[in-house]
Amino acid sequence: MLIPNSCYQYTPSCKGKVKSGIEEFDSPPETVLNTLNFLENQYGGVIGYL
Image 1 (cartoon, rainbow, N blue to C red):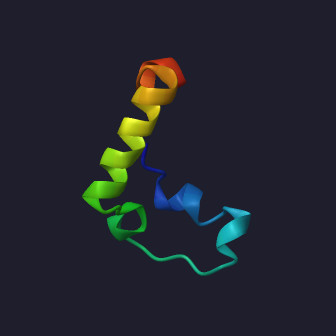
Image 2: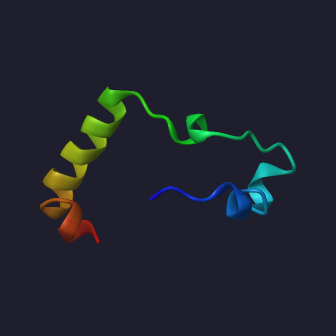
């Protein structure tokens, strides 16, 4: 889920250092695949996790 910049700007953890654009949500493909594999092994998939 992508968080709109207007919401993201007010996240306390960003401490006023907000970058604009989608690069904030960029992940290497292997990270995404590892996460999906973990969810599959631990919970039977994304639906099971949710």
